[in-house]
Length: 280
Image 1 (cartoon, rainbow, N blue to C red):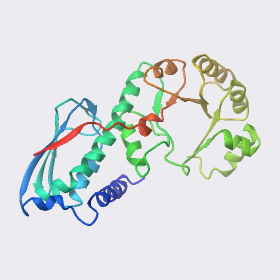
Image 2 (image 1 turned 30 degrees about the vertical axis):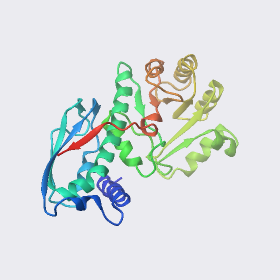
Image 3 (image 1 turned 135 degrees about the vertical axis):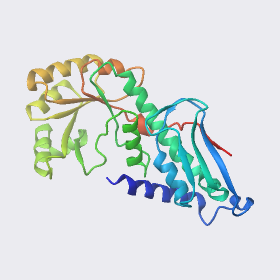
Image 4 (image 1 turned 45 degrees about the vertical axis):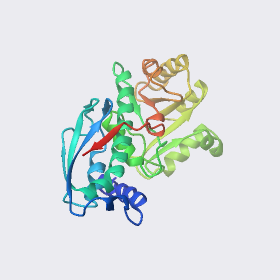
């Protein structure tokens, strides 16, 4: 993954859909006029997306000056000035919305991730993202998850195998699915994970040599039993991940069952943008 290339691609697309054939409103401002603006946060958050913000202005004019007072991953407070932007007024006005869209969206992901990470901090469990991302922004959102203290799952279908219920059925069973996955995996760096929905399926997966298991929609009692069964059958080397209907209200209790990871689709799926504004 080349993050710099991804940022440039994201920003080109964002600017193109907003500007189209040209920014008509910017024509209201005298050509050549320079202005100074501040970006202000209207709520507590974790900041993320600085490079996307900068690129939104610099793709239009490299002469725009941006001075940041924070960096990605920092906790920011209501009414805090995040950065100051100086440059051609037309450029600032044209890039404003695109720049803020990236910054407020990625800050939202980082903020929610940090809330989940803080909730499970007394335990050994990691908070993990999923592929439930906004189209075109997967790498950006997964970067934001890391800024919030979370852990990335696979980026896509190409860099990891997650065997789900339909794969198991199509392959003829858990043992067959795991065997086939091992035979088609092109590299030892690509992990193989299998999803189970019952404790009996967990036993079957472990007996078939599973090293990563996703426990789908297990209740707390089942999760605790799953941890015990895994230790009995395979020791501490197996990675157990809990998934399904995770919220800030229940995630700590899930972590306390002893699972290694908790995947939370809402980190990247249910995005409520952080309130930011640019003021001249």
